[in-house]
Length: 482
Ligand code: BG6
Image (cartoon, rainbow, N blue to C red; front, side, top):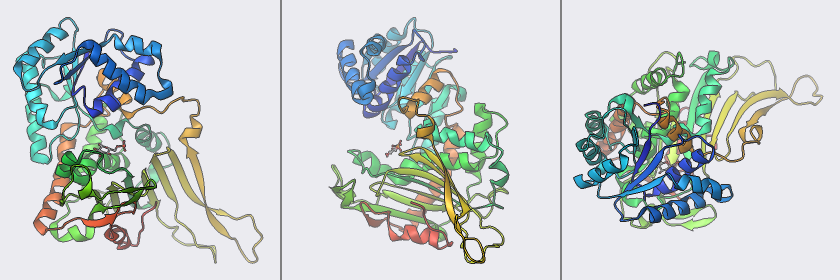
């Protein structure tokens, strides 16, 4: 099918659907980007009429859209909405769903439920003949908790949906600046010749959050920062930074390059864990100007050994990146919300400027909160200095916010991803082998922590993580950029 006739969301009353999926679909519709006859079916356990369901969705859309809410656009959108109640593990729910889908043409199923329901849902759909071509499926993370569980889910899905009809979402790939990494690297002749171990000293990828676990303790405590963020978002960023140029933008070309990066990640052995990884867990402190509880004191919390902060010094075993450290860092309750990638270039081989310390060039790509790209270069200060030059680092700044002032609103990352899935383009989705290769590397670290008894070190909420995080970079003569 070129475009589906129905978009079915399982978990339609859940947090993700309310905060992201319905508002994204609403905006796509308001911009005239949805197929005119696309029906949107919300499936969940609650007993709701179509009318009640529309009212719930309207509330979520209004909350998210704020001043961008348009009554007229909503009226058009709400006509698409239909509700299908029922228990996802009860076969009868799929009979009712099939009836609602009759005459709609192909369907796209979005699984935004607990992962424990993925397999029952796929089997339920199959029982009613709803998994046949051209129907497609979109699955949210977490897809499993380890390589083995990820494989089990993938295999169960693959029994009914072929790989080209399976879309694994990583919402970071829907972010404008993340896509811009591809444009920056491969749309400019400037960077590619320098993009290797000869010129790059190290790379830093930080995704820092000020939020805590936000009422998700039960989920988070099972997963921790490494599974929740590193296995997917941070490794996807690493792939886009480190991959070889794909020959085109087709899904298979881009994803084949990414999987090569994941396969060249050097495994971190138990004996190196204390040197190459840092785990932390926040204690009470202050973030965003407010006193916040420690992790164990969060709503529904308990004492636990789950990490809310992780820093890793990774290496890629390939020609381009041999010997270049890639520092990955993410955590909750850090001092500010920011996601940044820093490419630190090497020093000039020889300085001819006596008396001026030269700072090596640095390319900083900020993904959040404001999107920007900055290149630090050495510049002569406009002064008369006796007997020589005085140099100072200055930054060439490109603020994407200023450059695209005309854009009225910042898009939700899901808008792009939903549109791509509707258009059957999987370039921005994670292929099965990518997901499994990422788990393989992460599993070894997590299992190593458990084998060696490496527990998270406490850090105060509002700080940049445990002291070990600083030692991780300093050991190699580097330091984090904040
Ligand atoms: C999600 C994680 O995938 O990403 C959350 O489960 C995290 O724990 C979130 O807060 C961060 O996403 P963003 O887009 O706010 O950086």
